Picture 1 (cartoon, rainbow, N blue to C red):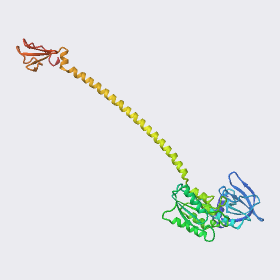
Picture 2 (picture 1 turned 30 degrees about the vertical axis):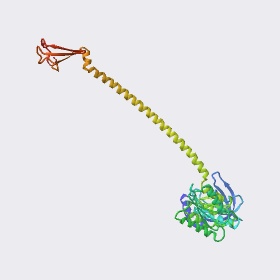
Picture 3 (picture 1 turned 180 degrees about the vertical axis):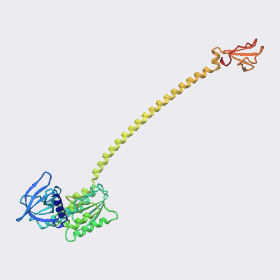
Picture 4 (picture 1 turned 60 degrees about the vertical axis):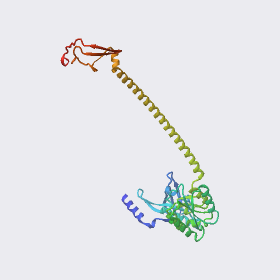
Length: 376
């Protein structure tokens, strides 16, 4: 059974004619589960088909399924291998009776969403040095944006590419402007595509498929500020960031200089405190090093003084005067110290030095004392 269902699934997956279908029918048995998935039955007078709106598709729907609602539904035929049944997976819903402009816009949304053009959202530089403005050169939009950019971040350089934002030639001019900006040698960091409010017909240029694809093809992030808060266009879905109005778009692409000044002040304070702490820490280290050095020097000097005192005492103990003072005498013969009786004879004249004077004496006799040899 599983092999059969798998084979049928492969056939359905490969059959392009049952993908990207628009089906008109009436919703019944609509149930939304905590998971976010919506299950229902889509039927007409002769037949019905089970359908599902997955959670990730449900969040992007302009219209949600309702019991008894008649609608155009866009999606693919899928097969559940486990249950052996096929369902209609819905990714776009347009309530029957909608105006031609709305219907056309929803059809294009479904197509571009399926291609993934709405999925890419690149980050906008937090502090751009160069911003390109693509909008009309008449009216208040350009003046308001320039005023906001200058007030919030005077350092930013502005590249202005004037275009028509309504009428037959508008789409072509916008596409050319985006391509030209991308070809610049010094490229801007971000592009703002903007126009003031108006009816769906006035804003239709920004629902053109070629304009949407030009935005997607841009190497530079694009921010849209089109119409008012409640206005949404295809360009808004493709852009990297959507702002509710042109003025908000200008505010979103550059930082506020006052906030930067405040932030720098806070960071300066933090750095100053850290520096003061570091200096105090180093000063404490130097004080401790000085104290340790001073103690080491004192210990060294004290040790040297003790050594000097010891040496002085030793030298003093070896001083001949000190020896004589202890009762010893120094005997010389003809100026030479007498160390032995060898060569000494009766009648020799000796000089005997004591602590407080000297005595001249004559040798009366020489007595040899018997001593053991080699200490034995």
